Image 1 (cartoon, rainbow, N blue to C red):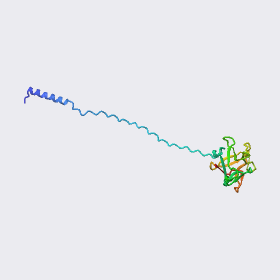
Image 2: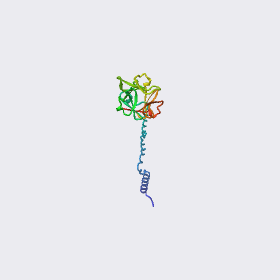
Image 3: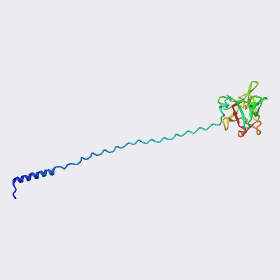
Length: 207
């Protein structure tokens, strides 16, 4: 068949159109998503240290070398009871003895225990009962028996240590001569060389 120039032109135009169509870019797909932002790192607050329990301070040890201050500061009268349940008391003769009931004693059986010097550790035991208008002081001379004498703070036989035992009102009374105590029968005062004897224990009672 003979092809006419018109037909050739038509075929050429169609070829060009197809070529252009083939060169056109394909439809792009979805735009790529923008890169996701990196996750925000969370800052964890540091865990606080657990509070340590407070350690209680140990209670201080009670001291047992001084009697109850209110009983030996010279401000009040006391009765001095022995381990035999008898009481140290002055006699009308000017001596000192043990009695079963201070309330029935012929003269007041109370004492005042006070320091020789304010705040000091040396004491005198002074009677409430008066002799010729003056109190008397307990005296324990070396090698002698307990007795009473005119008060003289310079006399070593009248100066005593008064120390606490098991309770604040439970005391031992001693000086250079030894430890004041009661004899085996509990009937009279004596002097022990040491304070190991139970009979050298006395109790101070506020009447």
